[in-house]
Image (tube, rainbow, N blue to C red; front, side):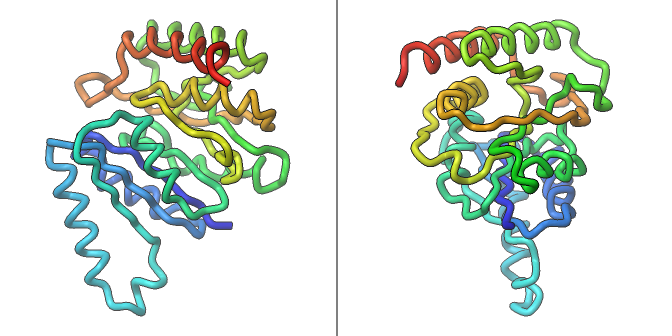
Length: 240
């Protein structure tokens, strides 16, 4: 089984090297696809140096290393746009979305992959609300996540606990016939609506969560929560 690990990154100079290191240490055959979404803080330069180091390895070493592929967006398209780019070039049997800020820990890959590898699931959502260790943080973000998940469940008839989770794992064939259109964080409710309509088997598993503060670079805001509600309605009621 080949994993395609898609890492959308925008202005993550403080985290990107550590994120690549942690993902590279995951004990699987994998390709790491980093999509720099128009960063302006030096992230692009760091990624270029990593690419140059990879390309300078002797062939005998390089062919046994994790393949790191980097795509540079000329302008910022949002998380959804970066994920879409990664999915379009992924070669793996299983696709994992991995945020570059390490709010989600690659050490959770075994529990995320197990339902798919055992043939039980088409998709696995890593839930921050099923009992895994997590940083105690923003109360209103927590309430907002619960409300958005509730609204999504009302339209999809799923009983998810964390629709907005950044840890989503897919069999590659899930994306056959599905076109991702949302940019920014609309990817989460859009893909949830579309896989629910497709009848995919979805599992949830508990994960650890190390939420960061706005001072540390957190990007999602209440405006994205409002947009998520409209995205839920759009892709559940107004789109085929």
